[in-house]
Amino acid sequence: MNKIKNKNTNKKRVGIIGSGPSGLAQLRAFEAAKNAGLEVPEVVCFEKQSNWGGMWNYSWRTGVGKYGEPIHGSMYKYLWSNGPKECLEFSDYSFDEHFKKPISSYPPRPVLFDYIQGRIKKNNVRDYIRFDTTVRWVNFNDETQKFEMVLDDLKIDKTYTEEFDYLVVASGHFSTPNMPYFKGIEQFPGQVMHAHDFRGADPYKDQNLLIIGSSYSAEDIGVQCYKHGAKSVTLSYRSNPIGVNWPEGISEVPLLTHFENDVAHFKDGTSGKYDAVIMCTGYQHKFPFLPDELRLKTKNNLYPNHLYKGVFFNNLPQLIYLGMQDQYYTFNMFDAQAWVARDFMMDQLPLPSKAERRLDMDKWLEANDKLETSFDHVDFQSDYIKDLLALSDYPDFNVDKVAEMFKEWLKDKDENILTYRDKTFQSVVTGTKAETHHTEWMDELDDSKERYLFQDENEEALEEIMEKQPI
Image (cartoon, rainbow, N blue to C red; front, side, top):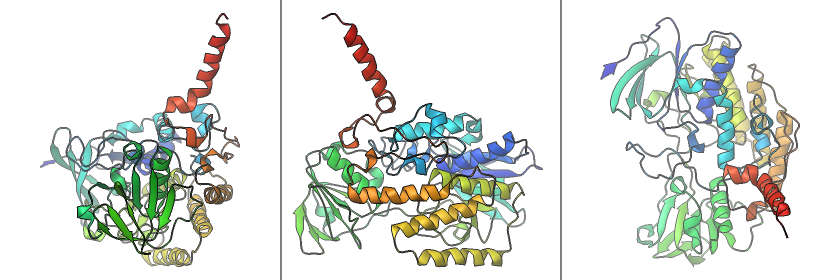
């Protein structure tokens, strides 16, 4: 194994695992400090995919990738934002700045991916990323107080090690499926898969589809398959139904108990015949590259234990986790976390003692345990964002207004799960009111950026051509 020595042993080094929205937020935070004339550490980001974007980097592949590594992404065709874009807008890079015109509140994946890339392309952060590089192991050396990382360059099949003063884990928590077992499932004659391997609704046209789960992925995949022609969609829930006003053709039933060939039996005594089963049963927080004492162990919730400010591993604050929460806020929350983490790594933000950090975490955990409704969850995460914003110079935004939009969005979904994406909202960054999309969401079967952004212009151009044609 080759050992690469640091070029400048006096300069602190920061290692970032992952270049999805969280990892890119951390890179952007350091670049903002550099642009302000501050001296920043040496930063290296390791990305096992061939491009940045994390989950937003769509791949048709399932199982393993080009170099035999497990596929990271769970992204699929026809995915549209399931929350208003105004709730995730970067406060230092607006949608107006990127697209140069108002767009609708619920863009498809290629449009959001384009927006994510736009901010990063303004800077040279791609130079800090080593693509097709996976982290095999991390050890913290108590004597040197450094992280020793074992890395694989997948392109040239080379293993080497490097040392870092700080480690930022931004690898996400939506890539290791939680796959339950149901009696008789091995005899089910149709396709059985986890949402991690779902790549689009096309294969389920004219099929009776069973979805296990009541998460956002179950809701979105179910509605997408209905939209693209599934004969029927049945969602099976464990404890609580999603509970929206479903259209004819989508229904909810209690938990699946067992299969008899292609017949599924449910807890309430009902049964049905199905062509395919998709497990929308969540994901596990998995960090196989970390030793047990450094590994975050949590389920998906709004405030993981052992993370001070939801970011710093309490037993070793030099170990930083980004984006590990259950999420209402996304891109702007990752930014707020990254700015705080940056200031700590640049010695601009001293942390209190370990005991004081524990007391602060306990306060948040106690509040988290008392949450009951979705509105409570929104308010809790809004308060968390405010707490982070007070600690750094990340450009402020109206968190209370965003919380109001989240609550309106929740009401819209309850009223009509098929039309809520046709609503529009106002940006808290620029004040711009979103445009109504040129096609109602249920009728829009093309999620391409070109169709989304330029359809109106294309129709106008076609009309002009037709007007000039001789009668």
